[in-house]
Length: 173
Image (cartoon, rainbow, N blue to C red; front, side, top):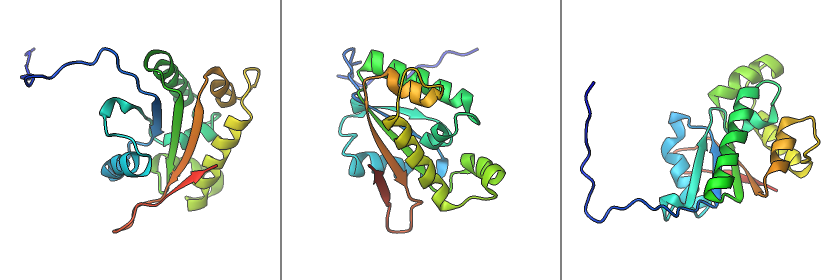
């Protein structure tokens, strides 16, 4: 076993009073890595300071929330992560992002819908929005119950698959 060391630049300090008001659930699909930063910064106006938001990367992104019966472990991890972001870092706004051509969701769509249709992820993101609107601590649905546990606002976003010149996204009201 070898211990390695990185030289800390002069003036670099850990901010012990970090407050990340925004938590972002997204899919860490490597094909989209640089586009996420662009969406966060240019589309959502975040990222002028890295501590401004907390990243909650889960394969399948927020689309997994639309299918808690197929993704119970992911929903549990998202609930736990969101709870930590809310309690310890002050997250009061959740940005839930799903994207077209998601490889994690493709298997589920093949199984229950017979294929990967671009409208499927839109349907999923609309379902996530509806679950938030119908949140209740007494709900049998773990996602509706999760949303009711936290005092948060929700932004639901469908990220279109980037073209050569554009990154389009849809804000779902």
